[in-house]
Image 1 (cartoon, rainbow, N blue to C red):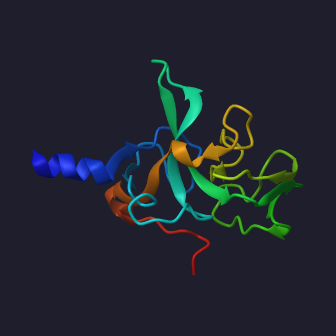
Image 2 (cartoon, rainbow, N blue to C red):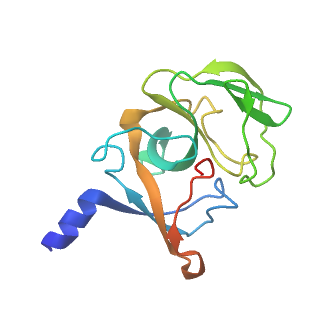
Length: 166
């Protein structure tokens, strides 16, 4: 029992419920979220990290809905989305990991505030994320943790790779 309590302080099991992260995560994928990745080891979320956070959206029971998204912009970054492409600080983002290689919506020179993140799903055409006023910027305080490991389906078991890390 003590071991279970200790593990739960560091790991939050999560099941993907939506299609917003396809083709990298599918409905019913079972993931482990490290609740201490940024707290215990210091640092902040990096571009490309997949995080789980409490959003302003509500579940049918009236609870804050947990969302899984990829970090695109960090504090001070300038985000532009035009003609289906995402630019961070004037440089086109490599979106080869996304579902359609296209990002809908238009955003012009949006600056990510201090202690906040700009996050998007990998399935950009269906994802409700920072592009939506219902979600907006993600405060550091609302981050539950970093997705670090997929346990199911078994043929995809393993650690989660950040596409922007060498």
